[in-house]
Length: 105
Image (cartoon, rainbow, N blue to C red):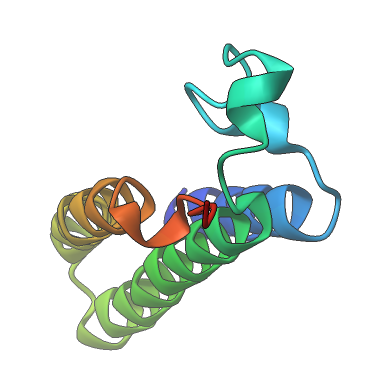
């Protein structure tokens, strides 16, 4: 199960960054076109890819450790741990002012 979630995260990260499926980014798809132009969507997509790949890597490592130690309970801790680390990172970094395009007047 954990491997399937990791594969899903890799697929989502790839789809957002390389497939330009920006509509998967909550809030961005509801902005007007004028508002969307105020943001560096490529940079935000990179953050999403990195966060998704990072969470997937943690899950894959956790899966391997749970198999090595023959303890399936580890998988649940790793799943929630990866999400508890990755989600705040994703929200904080993507919502920082770093990706807002500043226009000089």
